[in-house]
Image 1 (cartoon, rainbow, N blue to C red):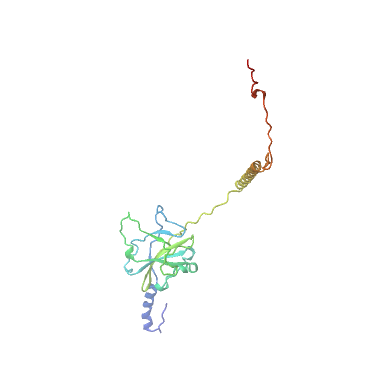
Image 2 (cartoon, rainbow, N blue to C red; image 1 turned 90 degrees about the horizontal axis):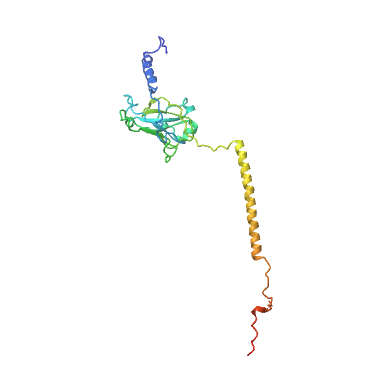
Length: 253
């Protein structure tokens, strides 16, 4: 901005101050890219969560104090360009704003939770979307993610005066999707229909034969005419055979 000879010395003195204020409004850049956890970790990606490596030792800059809040910004991949850091904690978007705004802040922490120099054999991760108990309208709620994504994340440092520093955006992360049962190919499906039809016909024939057998058995047992009824008289004739007759009496001598 150029100054003419007629401008006051007060305005000339304010120029450096305005320049300083404009410079202070820009966020400090932290050259760190959030990364997914190791591929061998169980539950690294699910249908509503994903797991990040903790950004340990990334917030040791002197301008960041232990009382500053470190937020994780979760955004749809196509909403990163329109992200605007909130100026106050009260203005931080919540998960309920995600469908319309395209991003929200969660997993508030401090740099004391992300120290450097820890042993490498310990597992330090952040599971995004892992809290099913909090309300999506609660500030900082780590609510399950609403869909497969893709998502991108970054860390944002905020003090009482507003945003202080930010990391780079991560690469795209896509969640797992439920597998949909696919219909079998056409020829195989036609063959299956023919087999089912044949089996149905055979089953119908078997049932008909069984029903016929049951009817025939019932008719033979309960429906036949008896030889003699209850009121009939049965006459029997006595037959004497010759060989069963008593021998004739022998005369006395």
